[in-house]
Image (tube, rainbow, N blue to C red; front, side, top):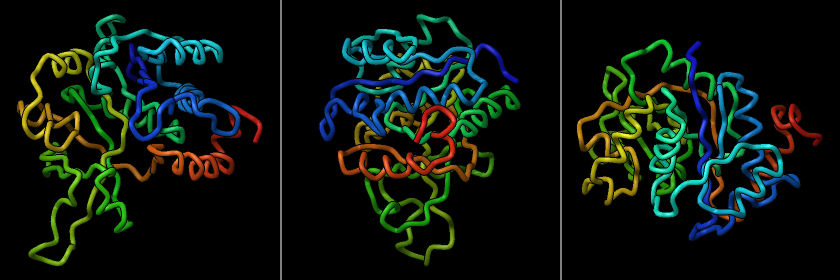
Length: 253
C-alpha cells in the first residue's frame, strides 16, 4: 500500500449558510470529530491533520486529540488550504477529506489511496457515484461530472450533465464525491495557476485543472456521502449517524 500519505481535513468557521459548521455538534461531538475518527479508521493514512485558520476550530480539534495545522485566512478554496499543508509537511501524497462530510466511509478513503497506489501515473483522483434521485440531479448543490473512456474528467458542472434535452436519458448522471487524492506536487501546482472562467462561473475547484489541461481521473464507487450545508442537513445527517455501524466503532450511540 502507498506510503507517505497525509489526510487533510480543511475546516473554517465562515459559511454563508451555516456559520461555525465544523464545530456544530452531531450526537454531542463536533462535526470534524466524526470526520477525523472515520479517517483514522481507514488505517491507510500516515498522518491526519485538521487545517484551519480559526483558533476556535484549533482549540476544539486539539481538545479531542487531533493534530492541527494553521493555514492562511485568505484561502477561498479547500484545495488551496490543502496545498499549503502539503508545502508545510513536505509529503508525497495528500487527501482532501471535506470537514462537512461526517459520514465519510473509511473504506472510501482506502479506495482513493489504493487508486493512487496502483496507478502511479494518476496525479489526482476523484471518486464518483451514480445519482438516482431527480432532485439531486437537478440540485445546483450537487456537482455533476462526465468522464471519458479512459476515466479522465471531461467536465464538472452544477447543471445536469449529460443533458436529456435531445434524447431520453439512458446514460447515468454521476456526482462528484467530495474527497480528493493528490500527488502533492500536483496539488501545489494547481494553486499556482490562475482560476479560469469556467471555475469562476461554476464555482468548482477542480475545473482549474481541466481548464489548464491537467489530468483528473475518476474512480467509481457505491459509497454515498451526506454533506452538511445547512442546519436542516445537520438534523438529517445526525439521524443517519445514529444508526450507522461505523459510528459505533468510535463512540457509544
